[in-house]
View 1 (cartoon, rainbow, N blue to C red):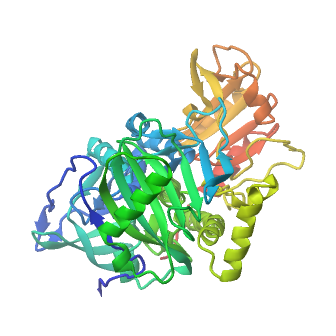
View 2 (cartoon, rainbow, N blue to C red):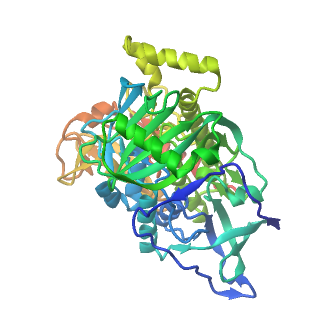
View 3 (cartoon, rainbow, N blue to C red):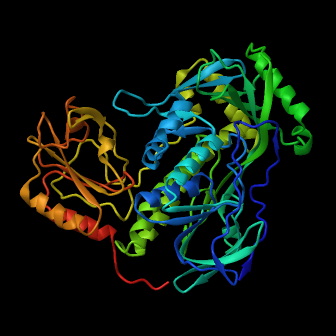
Length: 576
């Protein structure tokens, strides 16, 4: 057995002044025990009931797989934590069953403003058009979204056993599973599971128990984060960033408008500043006052929550270790710049859910889980690459770098070319173009546009059975075959092949027609989709259960579908 020890990697000072909403506090639940051991063995146990663990549990449930979620706290997180959520995350939240409430209460935005001192030097316009179902981003509160996920998990109690005040204390890898010791306020007990997934955050107990260390770098710069409640009527929604603002000369400051009449500030401490001193409420409040007055805002406000943050770009080298898997902050830490933290964690969960579910259900071999590690480690490093540039621009690591940064900002006012250098490059789905799951096309398959293997499905409005909809409405917890045609009729050989394969693995074929057809699953009434996807009658796109394109062919035979599924669903026996 391995005993837990403290992980100092994400030390944080935190103060709460008032609640965001009436938090629900949950009692601990202890299962039926025999001599301190749970009598039932589980297929999947998830350590951590934050957004990553809950998203994974809901994703597994969509695939018919039960899980136990162990959450050490008795409620959702305090503070806004993650505050901006991207289109990709919204698409995943739709599949998890929480999108309506999230969109009803969030603030959509597509614009960001960057200032040098008191002058605007760059305006970010995130891509958005009427092809999209969701906006490029919304501002929201992580604790509120967590509560939505909790409610969704409660509605799936047949497949999700959410246990509050249950902390992983010890663990031991077995030949075909993991034994976990769980601490609760009542008593400790052990359970056994086929698979343990660590979604227990930056201070991951599971990671420490296994003596694993992340690799990467800690960036210069410490940031005070504070949420305040204030009348935000008339204030545009979006990201605002100030370099060397009059309210804090020499520093940087970010501001977001939040739901519920709130603003969030992230501002940088100087190298010589004492953290304990600078985190005193009166000093933080004075900084907020100065900045609001600089903006011409003279309204009363109340503090809600504040914290101290350090930017890190760290990752485990692998996210699978025997029968233990890692996701979210337990697997990697990403600087907050570019809203890459919780968004990448939700993407982890979505990638892992179908792969783990297929392995648990015996539809695929355990090697499929290696592709989860390969793909998401690659995504983490790509996120680090973009976020680290932003982190070093926000907090230059050397005097020479600061001089260069300030020179670029000064030139932005006279030469628009330099403005591109201050683009924060907000998070978007990472293309998995080197994934081992991607299928090569035939040499004659030349596509001039459209999503490549590894890309996320590109959205487009369609008519679905006479009703307006979108291409993503055709997706689900399964492989999806998109067949482009004139008539909307799936050829007999494709119908036979998909019928045979769908009896062994979740698979659905959809036909997309150019014109109205009673046979088609969808009609490209605008004519955009065929052009966007460079599709002709007979073109095929195969989409994975997580929305990534697996392969595309101009005029293939049905054998490519069999080859693609065989490539993904390896079933050879594995020795752990």
